[in-house]
Length: 392
Image 1 (spheres, rainbow, N blue to C red):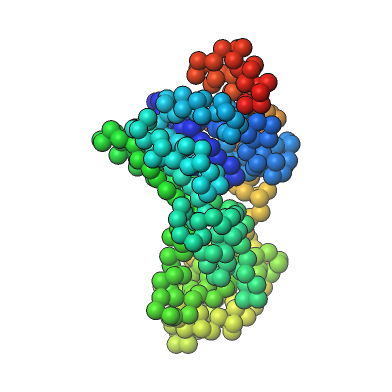
Image 2 (image 1 turned 30 degrees about the vertical axis):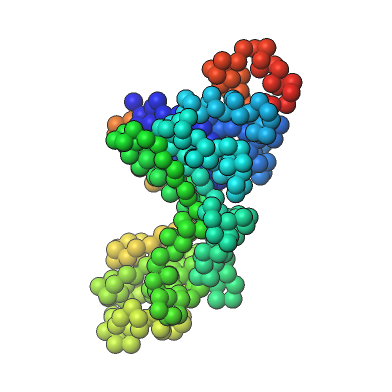
């Protein structure tokens, strides 16, 4: 038995934030019915064709779901959605601001007919305030939340290489729904969850926000190095490869000087005795460290760092992550089916000894339409009529 076996989630979703949330609910056993626009579906289906002709974002966030095509603006849609939601436990939506309410799908509209329904609304900025109607793509939210101001080099900001604002919102929606299901088990009543991408991302910005409190200077952009701890970042070895390392405290600085740099004199140098002083002197220390590292290739350097128990890492590219020895040793890869054949998939983080996560297929557009409509009482003739009318 999986934790969410018997729970049905209906989702009006696109892009990343809501699909990432609902895929994780599916991982835990929930039945997730994804309502998509007939003909085109979730627009993330067309982002690219990198996975055997399928989109990389889509296959990542949509396994284990059922795809129902339904034109939400068609006259037949309200009755079908009402029947669908009468059987559901959760409704998730990240339509354009105000769209769900215009369709009669707000929590207030649904509460009387579906008192146990949990409604989760995801948006860029929330459902009120002066930014409510602004478009909110991931990069725009990274900008508004201040992430770009502390990320990148001194000369130019840089965005994160993955959709972290979408992921943040999806994670808060996911955890919020799990909490609401626990709450409903005690109260018997549903509720509304509202998740803002901006607020999710600003929560993740807590450290730089507090660092810059009371008008203090914010953390400077420091590339791949840490803005306020030193040495903590990438350093070149003698073979030209970069090694990431981090010295977190004075004990580690002493070990680093003696065992890695083989410069015990630096360990006793008062100019570098604290993190604050090392961070202030990072330019001169950078030159000194790179000079010492130039005598070692990257593997020798990593061995020396490991010997001194100084935290370090390789800067892996995507191909190296696919082949990562730790993931292989822990058997973290499996396969899921797609319309284009099987693909590898990472097992969900946070393994639970009590159940196996659901790892079912990525659905083709509308793959489950007939079966779901049949459950709602539509016979073959009615389904054919709906399809002919462009409703599904």
